[in-house]
Every structure is written in structure tokens, then in C-alpha cells.
Image (cartoon, rainbow, N blue to C red):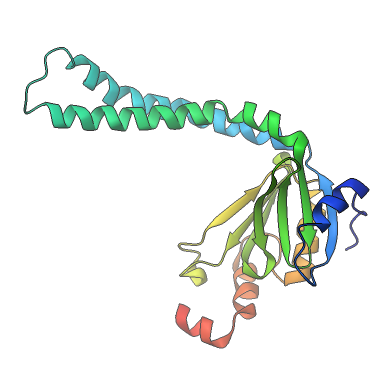
Length: 208
């Protein structure tokens, strides 16, 4: 599949980050769909705040009359409540963070990596194409989700993934990655078999 030519300014930016012998295939600014993915985080913030309320309420209700033997549990409740409250705040402000970030984000596909780059500070995420275990596209968010080969990749267990949101034309980019790596787009037995086929005999033996 042939992708569009990189924008001149973005190509200069990405060229400075390429490793020796690495070839840039495509580079483009992030799409506005990157902001829509933040709505999901906003929805998750509601149950997280609900979870934080219970331990915080218990800690505050006993704050005025603590006994010596009650203090350690109260500190634990307060710590747990504050932790979940902090997570909730992080999720609550995620849409705003993405709104500020996405105008500065550039995606680049090379023959070795998929890169997410902040024009102001440099690479945000880099995913080696040779490490891809599975791949899926979520078009509404412009998302390409890439799974890294896990310790038990044959069953999909303990495999880490990375989401790249706001990828321009994610279906075309995913198809280009599939042609480069042999890993088909989607999750299923065919995808697993294709990824296993890429492994060395020694690695396949370790996974059994």
C-alpha cells in the first residue's frame, strides 16, 4: 500500500530522529479524532471517584476522634482514597490534555517503527515493528492498538499493548504495517498464527 508523501516540515522533524539506515515511509499531523478518545477517560473517572469516596468518607468520619489502634487503618483508608481521587482527576482532565496536545503531535511510520512525536519536545512513544504481536484499529478514535509480544504470547496472556490515538487514516497505516510485518489487522487465530510464524524456533520453544 502506498501512503501519502510526508509534509515537508514534518519530514525534517522526523529525519532528525531516524536511526542509521532507517527509512521514513509516512509522516502526518495527528487527526482531531485524538481528542475523542479522551471522552472515554472522562467516563471512567465517574466510577473511580465513586471508589475513592468510600475510604475517604471513613477516614474523615473518624478523624475527630482517632484512637491509637485506629490510626494505622485510617491512614491506609486515607491513602487509598487519595490515590483513587488522584487517578479520577487525571482521567477527568484527560480530554483537556489531549485538546492541548494534539495540534503538536506528528505520527511517523518508518520501515522499523511507528512513532508518536511532540513537535515541541520530541518522541512520545516509539513501537518497533518487529515487536508487534497483534494489531487492531478503532476508527472512531483514529486508534491503532499494537500488542507487544508477551511472556505467553501463544495464549495472549501478559502481552502489553500501546494505543496510538488520532492516527490519520488508521486503516491505511495499519495495512501498511501489516504488509511490512506480516501481522494481519485484527485479533484472531490467524493473527496469532501469523505472529508465531515470525518467531525463531528457539523463541517458540520457550513459549510452550
